Image (tube, rainbow, N blue to C red; front, top):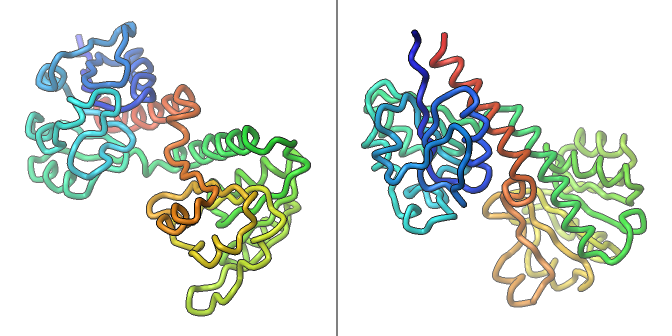
Length: 300
């Protein structure tokens, strides 16, 4: 009889518990350091990382695997959060799989030197697309809870037109909102115009001038999805005080942090929204990606 594959899930937020629950329907699962660890059918809660990894075929790390590139991302248990990723790899055997989200390059190098196969599920295109929709939905929820009026009566600016921005623009337009999309690419601006958005060209820093002058007034919310500083002190000083900036971009974001704090600008840095607003849906998306990797690598 074929031995049941064993997985060790380490750290993470509420999404990781959903991943554990879903994978336990197929595999033997042990967890250590997961947020709010609770009784889940088919899941063994381990007292130590050694117990979780012993005899496991694969180690599953959360998204992100680490917030500092060194230690395990384990927000639910600060004592677990101090364990170094290198120690986890040190407990693994040659031939095991290491699967995680946003795996640090240094960790991949160490693991591969031990002949451990590494897979970053954050690179899964399906996950990126579905996570983008959840992020857009969560960003819309934040705006709705802070506006004091309907979406249809509000004016929005979105900078960038990638996965998240395009989903967000579509949601806002479906609700009747007035939306301006600011993007560098002419093709992105054309796509935005096709769904009823106004458009604005973002120019490079050396030729920017005052490209943003037209969005400093009469807008209720500015959503930024560009991970480069677009909005400096000059912009923040000119910005209408009632405009709420929701920065969805990964570090370093698009807003001058120091200037925003000094000027008491109305800015919210909203990162990792899928895990905060829809951990059930986000966890299932991760579990699907992980299961596909495991089926490809362990069950052929």
